[in-house]
Amino acid sequence: MSVQTGQENKQENKRSFFDFLKYKTIKEDDLNDVIEELRFQLLDSDVSYEVTEKILEDLKNNLIGKKVSRREEVEEIVINTLKKSITEILTKNQKTDLIEKIRSSGKKPFVIIFFGVNGVGKTTTIAKVVNMLKKNNLSTIIAASDTFRAAAQEQLAYHASKLEVQLIRGKYGADPASVAFDAISFAKSRNIDVVLIDTAGRMHIDSDLVEELKRVLRIAKPDFRILILDSLAGSDALEQARHFENNVGYDAVILTKVDADAKGGIALSLAYELKKPVVYMGVGQNYDDLIPFSPDWFVERIFSS
Image (cartoon, rainbow, N blue to C red):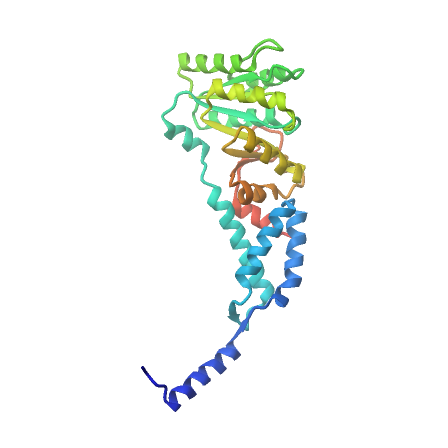
């Protein structure tokens, strides 16, 4: 058992005194104002209320009681810590490179299915994905398995013609699953790399159409499932994502209409709550207006104001 001498006690007290001058401990009162401002920033960027509260609560728990240099501003520490935390949340789930996944899968054809509610821009997004795959020297074919919406197949036919890719279609009212099956069979016979399956836009609360989607999935056995979400839909987009995950499941998300002054906060809500990556963003109407999602872009955009 060691016994401290008087000299050692003096040195310890001296160190404690200089530590007091050099460092400060963050208290809850130090965080309240900046946390409230960050709450407004996140909500204004369309991050869901539930996710915003969870992230800020985690932030407070990590910072309260932490020793920091007295020269550092608490506000700056809080903001930088939150930026790092958001980047880590997004990067953890951002592991899907679709082109690499297709090439490394060993599958031919590699089957991708797209679904989402009405009006999210699904048809245009599929055309953009076709364009991206072509630029990466991957041959494609489209299955027009939306056999119910008026002019749905005509819209796809227009894009397929412009992009010079094959379109497999059926009569209106035909079995959507059979159209997908025929497209996959055609791709196998022609050695085509990728089949892209369009499905009828459906409200996520429509149980009959969700059951139909399940049937298409059972028959097509897709290798990758992409949910299309409108970045302007706010909290409703997260509700759609939850419902599709609970009922059919999906691998990744493409956000549309990001160019229409959307902050894209749904990406953080998806990553935090559902562990789902946003792989691409639609930023315009042209075929090239599909860009990879970037966590750094998101952080910069959300804190831009």
